Length: 163
Image (cartoon, rainbow, N blue to C red; front, side):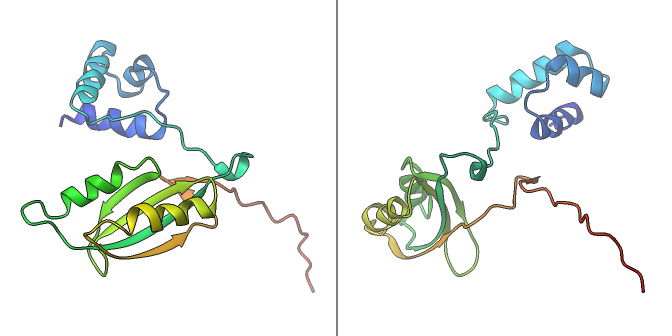
């Protein structure tokens, strides 16, 4: 990975709406080279998607998110891959991570209601033969995601009182 591509990735991670022209100016690089680098990274799936981080607590259409610790028995010859794939193909699943420690997979699930998430765990996730156990944690509030702070601290407007 070239130094230019790494710098482009860092800029796009902070603001995916930056134009190739602006990136070229910021990095003192030719616009054609920036466009070519971005196209190559998209083709190689280094850049997978340009996404918006949404603070759902500010929107009427709030969603329920849960993190589920899953203990599984690895499949002979495929290890954790086949089970992880089976799980991540469900539309309710937003992320799946192979973990070290007391459990094997961490699964992030999103639903419209608490009942939707509970139904997913009991009707889709738990019945998978390789799943030994699950432990579900509901997210009550997000303070920070992908380096972005959702709630700005309000300044303390009280007056200083001295003795």
